[in-house]
Amino acid sequence: MKAIIPRKIEEYCLRHTSARDKLLRELEKYTQRTCADAQMLIGPHEGALLAMLVRLTGARRILEIGTFTGYSALCMAEALPKNSQLTTCEIKLEHADIARSFFARSPHGHKIKLRLGPALQTLAGLPASASFDFVFLDADKENYVNYYEAVLPRLRPGGVIVADNVLWSGYVLAPKKKTDRAVVAFNKHVHRDPRVECVMLPVRDGVSLIRKR
View (cartoon, rainbow, N blue to C red):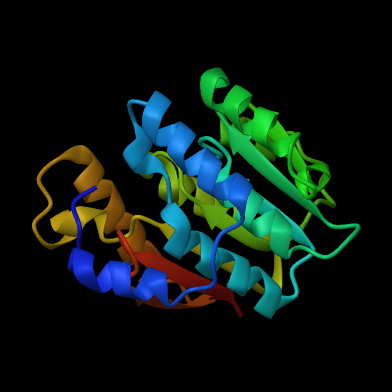
């Protein structure tokens, strides 16, 4: 991920953001040390934003598409009240194993249910009555529109989808590759959708906050 915001500005923002707990710091270091794709980690600044949004929306039922090593799930689970649940979807077993090991060590891990397999299949297999207050979308960009269309009917009115990587290291301005074009197509799809309202923020690699009308 290529930086969109100057590093010193990001560091300043982070210094003035509430501190992460010890387990999150450990997970961040572990991911950076052991995972070749560690750049996929959302990081402490965006993690704090997710936790704040969960608290502000009063969400009790969260869906995450793209667990990776579990950092974002732990951030959101910490913000969930008791007797709430976060369902997180991950396709890679090695990532799921890391996430589960850290969930087991967290006092909030019992709120998280990890579903291994393609997320679209997981969603199709959920009961028809399953609905969500909050969705975090951070998986393969080529399927972003498909994920969005699959989750929107399950999102309560007033519920929020947070979509990550919507600036895609700036390549949305001059898309060349398939993934670049997929992110551009998703952004246009959401912007033109009368069922929602959206604000795009230049946080890390770009975050869109999408509220269902």
